[in-house]
Length: 154
Image 1 (cartoon, rainbow, N blue to C red):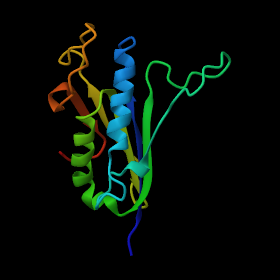
Image 2 (tube, rainbow, N blue to C red; image 1 turned 90 degrees about the vertical axis):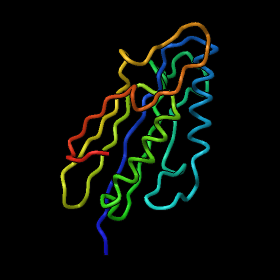
Image 3 (cartoon, helix red, strand yellow; image 1 turned 60 degrees about the vertical axis):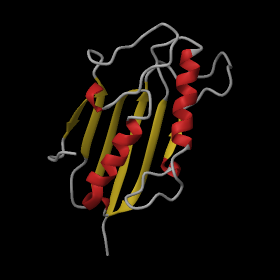
């Protein structure tokens, strides 16, 4: 018998460009999330865990759900995944390296531990945002900073 681990968080999409690059970034990120496996092997990082905020219609009085960038959010309750959390985080960082994003937070809590928060932020001093209408370069590990309340290394 295992314990429940609640795992949830978000990825904030980078939103520094005007159309058409902005639309290409949205399309790219949507495709990357859409290409995640269904029923991924353990520990799972699967398509069913994710959703993306969206403004589907342009009613003037509707709240803007994409103000300063969309949010890609995710969550699940898993059985004792904290024992394989490092493996899950390796998959998660691979996903981050395929997306165009600014910040990401993962929260996890077990039935016997306090809430833990892991944060990735793109270092805009090392990631060069180019405004020449070319598609942004991928964000790799050298472009982000990582902080965690959980004492471990990926």
